[in-house]
View 1: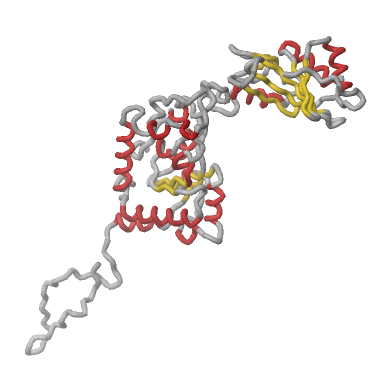
View 2 (view 1 turned 90 degrees about the vertical axis):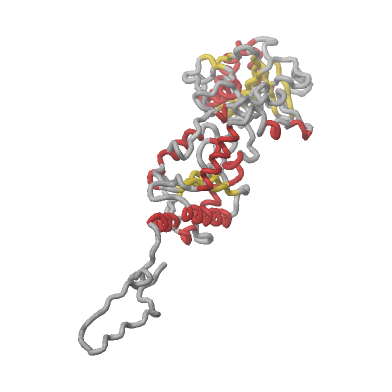
Length: 180
Length: 236
């Protein structure tokens, strides 16, 4: 996780204004950034996530939540941060710019605040992250599984979950011709 | 089959002295009226059944596209009397499972199978429905024949429409050969097959499939989180 590259001049950096606004709203050193070409990624601890997203939405024009996704970094080479990461891809409908906000959580019982009150469209995306990774979203109105069946016990996209599962796909009654 | 009015029969000569007397002789063969066949009720019923199959398409993947092609004019499943695709299981007697079946879909498939009236048959179409295909993951059922009875399997990914027609003809041969008026319990291949599957299920843990499949590391790639331990259920 590299910190911000400050060499670029603010004139050529389209995100300079946003980052300055964030820094004045949240304070120095609360978040870190990294860049890849035109992408800016902002890393923020879960405790300040709501505040940061609120500033981005209300003051910086990033009013459209495009995507919520999760990642499990268990066993990732060179990884020193938290095990899970949840990312939010924002877009400004006025300028068309993208911004990625990432927050990290760790075992056991990873929990981060929900952004459904801010973007109702996050409802199903957070349910998917919960379904696949077991990350709980505090304040979500209806945190149920969305892809896997209700009775499913595990979180299949975690790295410690075997690819073939733990026999869930075989636990069905067997119908024969004599039964039906 | 016996046909009436044997031409070899010698006409009766009237007795000497004239008159209208008639002699009766017992016939050597059974006299059957003209244009008549003798067969069994089962055979007739099976004949009618095999030329009026009503398929229930359970299409979940690309196999369904080929199934649609079979229904269309170029391949024309109507030539085999099976063009009446109904989308309710209550009106169907041939379930065609086309595509992979996820574990969320398996209870649905079983419900559909149970809703179909007897007599009924099932075709497992394509590699995924038959074996899980390339989708050997936690969510995909590894062959529907583990959970519902299957009469015919079609290989291919997806199969050509001709293969589906071939399988339909095989089904017709099977229906003609077995089955009774009251059901399909008499199909000899089915009984053999179900006995074989029952034997497989009784095999000790890790004996049958696990030894063949539990070696994913042989190609040199490692699974995240290590190789999967095969449970008692999975190894069968």
